[in-house]
Image (tube, rainbow, N blue to C red):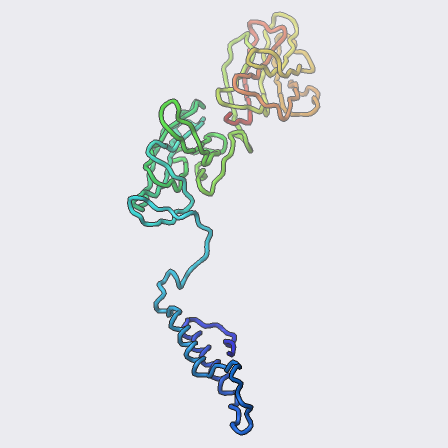
Length: 358
């Protein structure tokens, strides 16, 4: 039997026709043996099939194969993909192919956690589910977030079915990186025994950047770059030193402190010391100014990651600070002025930190 000629065949009918034509051509090209010269046939030998038998076989194969017009659109345009398991709902008995999904029931919730430092920020949560009746439903909720860095938590009820996706974005507020961190997860059970079983997505969200599942990622609140926070506190009471406490659920990396100290005429020389303190006020780090300050003078202090202490210049003193020292909630950055007097006053304070939620 001759092989099918090489080529492209857009339909099964044309493929069958090409096979039939090739078989007929091969059969016609074989000369029939002359009766006078042909050797007598051996009764035990196998007789080669004739061309009409080949045509019949080909016709039978063609009849067994479905014609292209009998194939529906799905079969004619099949694309092999990596799919999840076939899902059959008992109420329907109809198999449904689900995209990446997680089965949930009515006791499960979409658990929302958020930490925020921006006043007036509104968080929007959207989610999508595949229900037992094979319909897809979407939901949306908005929340006004507190700006005191306290943990915001909410549980969104879910219907029974497959959880297909969710995302969190800022619906109102001009948020930059480091000001609002959100985590979405699936919570199992109710009451005191409920627990977050699956972390879906988490990270800092911006005005034009959301966190989402699937396709997103989970990022801890201390990963990557933090928010550069700039504080100008004051005025400060006379006779008191500076002190800045790390807020709740927050981590600081001090970047710089600039301030001026005006001393009263009484008392002796003052020596300014910059300190990092633990919650019990014990010292984690300290650095003293290179020069004393005399009574009745005004002097500026610049605390930066200098590496080495520059000499005092133009009525200013310079204090180096660590570049990567991180302070946890409840720790503090402060000055301890040796010899401070009741009339001494700190002013023009500018304090910069890199800040994360923790």
